[in-house]
Length: 298
Ligand SMILES: Cc1ncc(C[n+]2csc(CCOP(=O)(O)OP(=O)(O)O)c2C)c(N)n1
Ligand code: SF4
Ligand SMILES: [Mg+2]
Image (cartoon, rainbow, N blue to C red; front, side, top):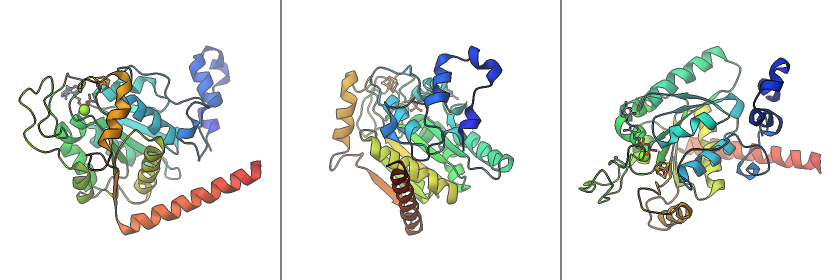
C-alpha cells in the first residue's frame, strides 16, 4: 500500500539527503508485520537522538517506531519536554504542540484526517511526558477521552519534569525528593491508568520499556482498538537516569526492578470483555496472515 507514497521525486532524488534515500529504499514501510525484531536489520524510522546517553525515553521511541503498524499513515503529536528533542529526527509526520495542548491538537487532527481521507486508515498518537499528560495537560487529556476521540495517548512517565531540571509531577512517587522539589512528594502517585479507564479509554496498558515485545503488543493493541472503539492509553516507565542518579547503562536494571512483583510498574492492561474479544480475533488474523506469508516464501 505504501511504497509509492514515500517514493522519491526523480527530479529531486540527487539532492535528497542520503539518510532519506536510505529510509525510502530500506525502511519497513508497507510491511504490516513490521515489529521490534526489524530493529538492526532494516533502516530505522529514527535516525539518532539528542537525549542523554542511555535515556530510556530513547529506547521507548525505538520500540514505538518499530511497532506502529502503519507508519506512512501515522502522525505523532508531541509536547514540550525531553521527548520533543527526538521529533526532528523521526521519519514520521509529526506536530509539536504547545505544552499541555497535545490531546486537543490530536483531536482536531484525527477528525480532519477522517474527513479528508475517509477511505484510508490514519493513526494518530500523542507522545508526551507525565508533566504534559497528567499535570498541565490533564484537562485536555481527559476531555479527549470523554469525547471518545479515536487516537492513542502515550505517556512517557519518568515521574518528574525532567526537561526543566526535576520538578514534582502528579506521577512522582510519594516521598521522592528531586533537584527542584526538595521537600519531597507528599501524596501517592496518581493512578492515571485507572482514571483513563474510568474516563472512557477502551484499552489501557502500563509497563516499562525493558521488553520490546511487550511494548509492541501494547502499541498494536492500542492502535487497533483506537481505530474501532475510541481512545486508548499507554503509560511507559522511562526513568530519567539523570534525576535518579544512575549511569547510562543502569536504566534497564531500574526498569526491571520496578516491574518485579510488588513494583509500581508491573505490566497491567485494562479493557472491557468486548475489547478483549476483538483483540483476540485481530491477533488470530495477524497470526494466520504471517503463517501464510511464511508458507509462500518457504
Ligand atoms: C506552556 C508551557 N509551560 C511550561 C513550559 C516549560 N516546560 C518545558 S518542558 C517542561 C516539563 C516537561 O515535563 P514532562 O512533560 O514530564 O516531560 P519530560 O521532560 O519529563 O520528558 C516544562 C514545565 C513550556 N515550555 N510551555
Ligand atoms: S534529562 Fe532525563 S529524561 Fe531527559 S534526556 Fe536526560 S535522562 Fe532522559
Ligand atoms: Mg516527565
